[in-house]
Length: 448
Image (tube, rainbow, N blue to C red; front, side, top):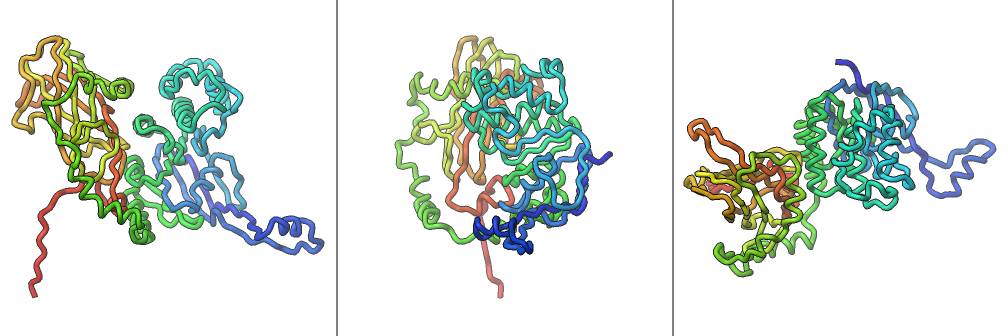
């Protein structure tokens, strides 16, 4: 495996002045008196990245991560050391970087393709895929200076993902995109990694780094403190974060004190028989848009809507740790099906299945003898005990072919039917080593 990136004793020094006037004094002093001090953004770092490796880069703000990436991409020049880069680089370092604000989205797509070395004919073959992935509608024909930060992120990632780079660098740029788009980007990056693209991924989301990357660098004060398998680096980084985390803030403490009130369900209890046809339409536009992504199945029965509800029947996209919720599926039969089962997956932002259940685990409940045109409402009630993160719910309905072999015919599968954010008053839940809280009956005994 050949080398993609190799750095030897790489250093980047900035001059720091206490006063603006000191810069002029130093410039024009007849005896070259120094009024500045050196700040080492990078301090004598060396590493080697092989082609096809996927590298995570973690560290606190100011550790030197962005400086390193800017040197790799040629935005900055090093103060010392050497750097070897082999292959075409596509990067998402800052929103709008590489875009001409006066040009339209389409024009910027072609311009970025030409900059990376593709001809117009090559970009003609890619333009439809890029536009479809970015999914910003008619804004693709408007000047990018009119774009929101989310639109910038969508277009920038789509361009860089589809120009077939040898090296892809992503530096927290996806954090401004909406949750559904972030999931699409994670899927795309995984497919690029499988295709042999070298990926450098910078994120404060340690679970995303651990799940996406095999190897990681931990940076601090311009140095690489650790170069090891990603799961080992992430654990060390988490410990650093825990040690630097102080006591709960006043607001967090108050939130924690009021948590029991929030979970008591002071609102009216959920009544599974008390819903209107109109209520089943709520949120349908968003569901139908998200459902187009990687949807599959033979279409004999389909999801018309999927909703996440609190116990009062209100739509929610934010869940308090420990809160009970209702996942509601609205299913329409297009053809007669003698036996239809259903289930759902809860996935993290990188697409890892954390929770799975289906009707076979619930006394083999299913819809029997469903006829064309019939609509069913399926409600799942469960308590959310997941760490403070963003999650997707994938929904599936299927007809069994051979129960003994767990063989089914997929009627409809929606990878991203619902998204929700878990919030918690306890900051340590966001740093815990696992996603799912496992309920325990804890007993502690003293024996001496």
